[in-house]
Image (cartoon, rainbow, N blue to C red; front, side):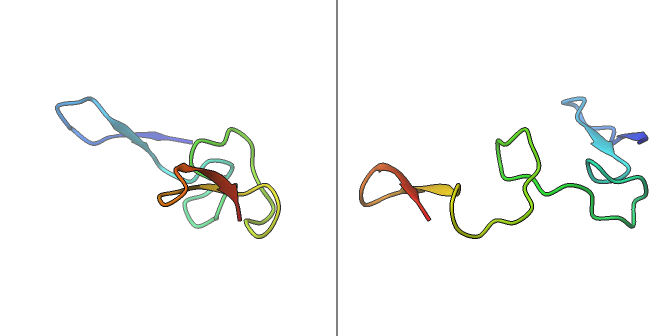
Length: 60
């Protein structure tokens, strides 16, 4: 993977391909926000979201 310098004042860099991919044309791994391991799918058990009305995390 190649690191791309964006020239931003923050020093933020970008990757030349997705995490887990060998080429920029490949999908790479599927990660939910904040996850550190890949997932095969995002349907059903194991998914949580913050309910505004309940003010707690609920299972989807």
